[in-house]
Length: 602
Image 1 (cartoon, rainbow, N blue to C red):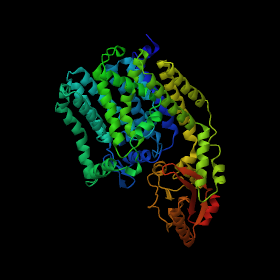
Image 2 (cartoon, rainbow, N blue to C red; image 1 turned 60 degrees about the horizontal axis):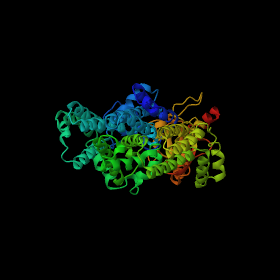
Image 3 (cartoon, helix red, strand yellow; image 1 turned 45 degrees about the horizontal axis):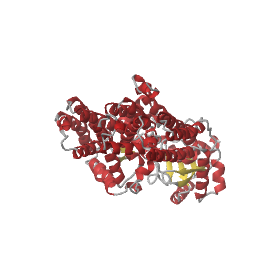
Image 4 (cartoon, rainbow, N blue to C red; image 1 turned 60 degrees about the vertical axis):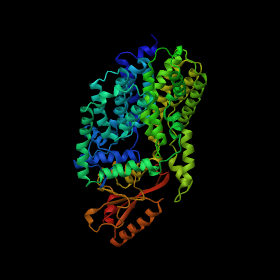
């Protein structure tokens, strides 16, 4: 028995796979600030569930957010109710469902793969999937994808058992429909799409082999799935005055199908081009997996492939290929859309690893995959290095119109001063894994690739990303606000903190999430100060890089002069808003009802 066989047997296999993804993603869950824009929108809507007690309609401040179903918001609100404190402003509490979901997705992948390709292959494939950069990234983002990929993988595990066993087990069919209903509540018809396309391809592939689908048509299953979704759908239609379906289907879904929604477009091949990075380290075996699978499905009598079940490969290929093709042809393209195909990719790679260990020959594809692995590995090594930070700073510091490049760089200095003790061994492991693949030491190559992904991921999530305040615009704005005691309800000693912040020239969702629902941004921020003295202090966060904000703030200043209000300003703080690639120059301005109060606070 090899060391891989020992690791893949018994309870320890399940523990290792779950711990792999959970530990890889953990630093990002707790260290990274709230991300713009989708993560903060999701988390803010979940926070408002807790604030309002309305767990039906989905809102972002005062607007309905008619895009996705409520399932993920229920999970996020539940985890925040358990782990949150005070005003529930800590983003990590909203990330817990995604974090756990990603870990469970790896276990579901292993469970799906055991009857299909064997325990050893399923273990290696699940490890490659669990260490993949895309999965571990989605695990620390409070959106739908971490939970969704778990439910889809679990549902596909039910289907693959039905397909291989041909016994029409109604319990498996019922489990599939329950999982389907849960998946629909998380992200609508995506789970239906992935499962449905795979079933259709399998039916077209061999029309004589469709008896296994009979259990899926057993009426209690589809009925339960519908009943899991329909009551909430009716209630939210009532709560939103009939606008939910129009927004979710007539706009959000329709926009993604007929155009590049919100500018997220790309040429065909978009997802393939991202594989070297996002499917790292699994890309190490991706090309041999495709070549060997094609060879076996065409010539299943080849001795080098042993007695592997042809139906299992047909199912995994149908799952992988149809999911990839649909999202490749979809006009709206975001790299995480293809995540439901990654468990199938991982299982194909695990199967190929076993075949290569058993002396299957695929030299050209093995070298090509090694080259792709090096491309992804080198990109990850460069991204997590201090030189990448310095190059990006030098490129962006000259984009400001209100300040010199030198002044920006002086404030940004020190962002590249982070340790490299994780980075150096991670880079060496990339080379080790590539070398082991070339000399056909497949087990060592997989272990090296997984460890490289783990170390370089930790490097990014512990040292690189959390320290880059200059690309975290909201965190930079909070530094300016802290100078004038402008963070709502903070403890500043004798100085009174404001109840809210009024932003000009800045409206990112992370600003609302981390400072509070009550805070305003354009176009809601007023440009006239209140006449009531008890409304003070009034604090503005102004982005002077925005020409409109400059004009609006002049109106505020005019109002202050007319009312005799006094102001206190912070020093300017400079950042890059990565959501739109625009520079921001924040100044926090605090207005008091009288100049005596300003003197007293100083």
